Every structure is written in structure tokens, then in C-alpha cells.
Image 1: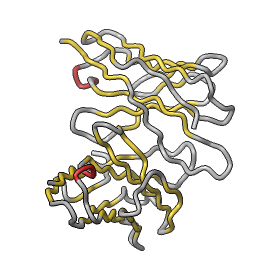
Image 2 (image 1 turned 45 degrees about the vertical axis):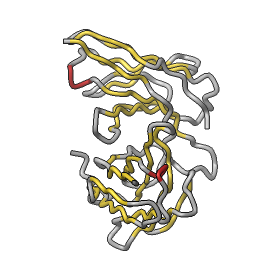
Image 3 (image 1 turned 90 degrees about the vertical axis):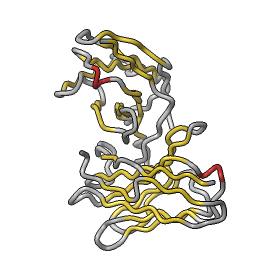
Length: 113
Length: 114
């Protein structure tokens, strides 16, 4: 599986934007970039995913570099509820692949009131 | 609420024992995944079932087994339990098994082996 690199932790203030980076220099052409987050004492939850173009949904935006070797998850206005571990995951799309999620260590986001 | 349910929420047992964790996927989802989360290993994929058939295996120990029943619920059986099996066990489900399918996670079962 292609690997991702994320900062161990980041800090933000409430109601400010947050940019969570992810490097994936060995990404293959068919890999989708997925973001999940895990709130304290809960299971992971889907945030957003994309392939090449930037994506927006009600939770966040995903900005993907032109060479696809990095991406950034953008939370436009952080709330206390956004404090979580954020995982950047490449979905392995090779032939014969299963479609598991391979979690790294993620980024622990702290949101200050 | 993801729509995925897991029982029990907590389980305390002794070494050498056998336990069964249960997962009910979201209505209509055919694919079920099991993950283990421990402090030292993080979140790791164990096994995937799709419409009753085993689809993929991850780092699942031979002491562990799973199945998916005709009603699509799944069970993860852990036997000859060791202290190191203490962890959070998550079940996830998705509509099919496609690359872009979102996985919806349950709240997990916390297993403590004493």
C-alpha cells in the first residue's frame, strides 16, 4: 500500500480555518485519497475523498496537489467538536485488491476555545 | 449514529477464554469489515466479508475467525485469548466493496483480557 505522512499533532482555535496536510509521494494513478476522523471514544467516521480534483462537502474541503503527491484537508471553521484524530488514507485500487482502509497514526487535532 | 451496531460495548474476560463479538451492518450494506485498535498497533484491518463470502484477510491471527450470516450480520470469534488481545474492535460496513465506497464504523467493542 502507498504510504501517507501526516504531522503527529496540530492545534487550532475555535472558529478559525484548519489546514491538515498529508504527503503521499508514492501514490499510484488509481489511488483515491480518503480522509476519516476519529472523535474521542468513537469509531472512525468518513470525512471526504477525492481522486484528482478538489472536493467540497458539508464537513470539509479537500485540496489535491496537481502532481497528487500531497493533499490538504480544510476545515473552514473549526469547532470544539472537530477535535479528533484525522487520518489520510490511500485506497488501494490495484487489481485483486481488497478495499480495506489502511490507517496510519494520523494527526491529532486540538481545538482551543 | 452511523447505523452500524456492535454488541457488546464492553467485554471483560480471562486469558484462554473465547468470546464472540457481533456486528449488524447498516441496512442494505453487503460488505462488513473488522478492525482492531490497540495502543501499540493503531487501527488494523482484520478481515472483510461481502454478501456472506470472505473477501480479504489482513493481519488476523489464526485464533480469530469471523463469518457473515445470510441476514448480513457478522460475528468475530476470538479464542485462546491472550493479554495482548485487549483492544477496541470495530466493525464497519459499506454498500458494496468498491474502491470509492465509504465505510461506516460502529461504536466498537472494548475487550479487556485479564
